[in-house]
Structures are given as structure tokens and as C-alpha cells.
Image (cartoon, rainbow, N blue to C red; front, top):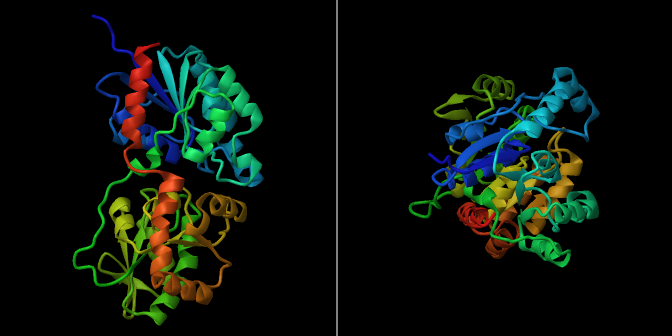
Length: 378
């Protein structure tokens, strides 16, 4: 019996894993799918029933972090060097028919070790960035062209540059917008809702501590506003209880409260995001997804290593007017939040920004079908 054609999905980050898993799920009927996450243990793939292969390790930094020496040192102490060696050896000998790389050029370079056809879903770099390092470098473009990589960029602006450089590229949307589910809530919605997105890594706890005074400031200006906190699976409930208790809050219902004020906790990210009127976010992918849905986002630089000043400034370049990047001043941020919630014209304009920067839903299906078509001609 002839074996089914095999596709190896290779991704270099947690958000990238989610994107890859979503596209891979659309191809499971036609191909044998294997997943190799370069970072972490591939939980997003496992959740989609996709077999995970290769050397795996959960790094302290949550990923390859070249911008933070302390985080990089901790990664090396945890076994980064042996991990890289094992990944190199695995990719040199793995048997597959083609590779779908998801992330940035690191994923392409890793996929090249297999010596197979590479389909690349560009999840990170964009020409909306002004910073040179956050756009595709000339050497990256040259190598993608030389290696005959089929590129699916994350936005139309980036696609235009790739076309000019003669790359085999095609813009079909950004599958980041297909990695969560929910629906808009218009019926019986009497109160505005502010959603807190603190991130998914260890620094999220410090971000929550900084967000609480902002929530108290907003409540003082408009007690009718509701608040929610979207929790990533990695965040621990007992740690949250310690933080809120230290700030004078107590457990209340499905969240925490202080007097007449409460924050509801939810692990249903998609529905929480659809239900929000305003996002206070110190997250990477989640902030982008909020903008993709036309939601205004308020943020400020955190303590890092992820949502650092540099990262926040880069995200501002990517998301434009949809991201309100402010200095940390709880009273000033609360005032801005109230202004935004009452700026109908501004909020209406965000839907167009969302479409331009993040694209329309359905990209995962479109990209999967195109890979299927192209694969059949190999």
C-alpha cells in the first residue's frame, strides 16, 4: 500500500505553533502530518491531535532570546546548546516529503537542513515595521529566492516588496486570526467591557500588578464599566491570588473583587476578546489579534524580557493608530481609556486598520488548500 505524502511542520515560537497547528489541521485528511516545534514542547500541536517529533525542551526564557543576555544565559544553563545540536542532527536525517516552516527566517534556515521543498508562512516580519531588523533583510530575501521557498507573507504590504524582489510569494491572509474562536456580542450588551491581556509568560504576573491600579482608576471615572482578565493556560491561579491579595482584593465569584469593583477571570480567550470594547494589553500575538478584530488597545512598556520598551515600540509600528502606547501613569491611562470608549469615529476606523494589518479570517484554510495544490505538482 502506498504511504500518504508527509508534511513536516516546523515552527519557532508558541504563537507560531498555534498558527502552524491551525493550518496543519486543514491538511490532516490529505497528508501524514508531523510537527517539530523548535521552542517548547508543542502543546498547540498536541491539542490538535498532531504528532510531535524531534528533540524538545522548555527553555526558561520561553524561546530563543538574543536581546536579553540574562535570559540567554539561563537558556544555556538549562541545556540550549545540546538542544540545538540535537535539533540539527534530527533535521539532517528526518524523512519527509516537504516542510512547512512557520515563523521567521530561523524557521526557514532550520527547514533547509532537510533538503526538501519549503513552504513558508511568515508570521513575524512585516514591512509595516519601520525598524530594519523587523523587516526581511536583503540577505534573507536573497536566500529565500535562491532556495526557491514558497512564501505566504502576513500582509499585503510585505507581499508587494517580495514581488518586486522576484520571490515566489502569495498573500492569502494571516492565519493568526484563525487560531481562536468567539462571536461578537451585540444582544443585551448594556455595559462597556475592558479586557486585560497580561501576556502568557512569567512577566505576566508583574503586568497584572501594574494593570490593577489602572482598572481602579477607570472604575473611579465610570463605575458601570465591566472588566475581564484573559488568562493564558501557563498562568497559575494560586499566583494570581497572591498578587490580588497583596493589592487588597479578595476572591469573588469567578474572579477577584474590591468593594463594588470586580475583575472576571476567563481562559476562553476568543470569546473574551470578541466581547471586549477596549483592550489593555501587554502581549504579543494577543494584542495583534485584538487589533485584527478592530479593538482599540492601550499599552505601556513593561519590565520585560518580552514586553520591553523596544518590543512595545516595534508593536506600535506594526499596529499603528490602533495601539495607544502610553507612559505608565495609572491616572493618565484611565483617563485615556474613558476617552477612547467614547470616541465612536476612532473606534469605527479601527476595523479598516485591522483588515489592513491582520487580514480577514479564513487564511488558514486558503493557505492549506494552496499548499495542497502546489504539493501535487512537485
